[in-house]
Length: 230
Image (cartoon, rainbow, N blue to C red):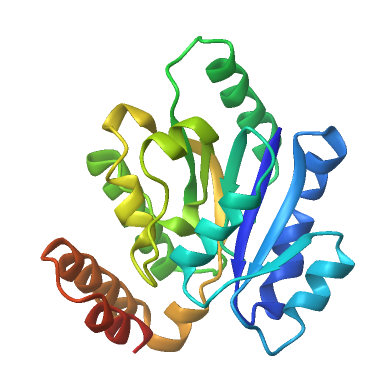
């Protein structure tokens, strides 16, 4: 029923955990294929994916282009786009199955679902970031790609799919969904906090907001990527 699409680039440190969280859905038959779209990894990413039984394809580096290529080869009616450093929390299978059943039965209009945001770090600072993301999602229904994206294939195609952007491809696509087509699930998607730890929580949060502001102001994507990568 679901094709999972994961873009990767040197993701060996996180990919195994991401894939492990999908196992219950594979056993239940909810997830029918996992597609790894690699952008030229030089570490063990491709080997890990292959050993886990994933379908591995290769695409030019750039998350937008990699997501496009993954969607092209996906075989099933629902698409779940995930980042390689995102780990879905226990209970996600039940909530996703309920959401899909309601859409497929016509009990609610077709929509895309994203998970709640959580960071894999302890303490006050990560909780502040999580609160800020929850507030953004409540007020603007603007989740980022690290919250995943579950969407019926026909709705994905109707809204034009991802564009070949190296950054902000998630915001670009979500903004083409109507507000009523964006649903935030209760289940957390646990995201790596490595960038926050490396850069400092305040600095990384400010950098992310600045990137979003530059995108909204239609700044060149190369300038936004330079700022994001730091």
